[in-house]
Length: 244
Ligand SMILES: [Zn+2]
Ligand SMILES: [Zn+2]
Figure 1 (cartoon, rainbow, N blue to C red):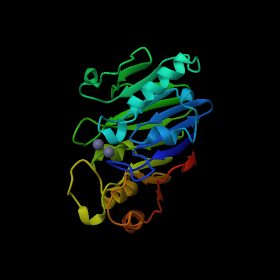
Figure 2: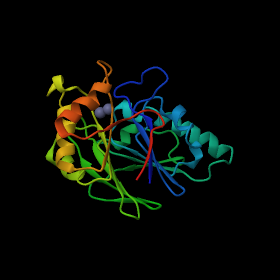
Figure 3: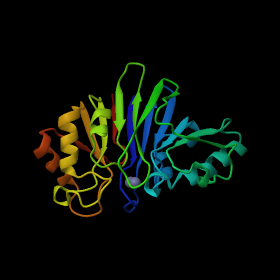
Figure 4: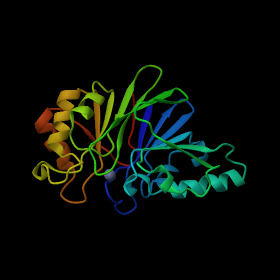
């Protein structure tokens, strides 16, 4: 299974970059985790849009789903051109899924994510856990047939639940929205101390941090995490690919 970072900023994209979006590939299966602002342009550096099998949206904050509406038009046009021959399944965790109002439901097949159910896309099985965030938001675990596990926290505050969900992951893709000095400033996000504590308790084999703040020197995030858990983490960047 290969994870490629498409966009990694929180809130809004820096110049020529994108907010939360990650491509997961196994054999011929391509799934997207979140589809933030700027993601669609960047995604096409990796795959053709018609090759997408499913999209999973952790929550309805726009830094995680702004480009889903552009993706709808892309699917519409590619369907009209005969390049795409099936609808795209889009799984969203939302308290009001009917309010999302896609124009072409026959092109974009929307499903509410049910936290108690797993979803199988080709060789990948996806399960979910409830996060601590301003609005309903879920973490995702993607497991392949060899039982390699990728856990994506999406947006969350530090909870025992996310620690348990991330336990022994082969790769943990974890949000890191604040520096150590901003402990507890914003509920529903984690700082470097929280991330270091998750790593200490969950013991993931590899870690990528993402969802960065727009202030300070972001390379310090990894340094601060190292002081907490003594583990080197990778900083998400466009095109960063890791195979597990
Ligand atoms: Zn976010
Ligand atoms: Zn959010």
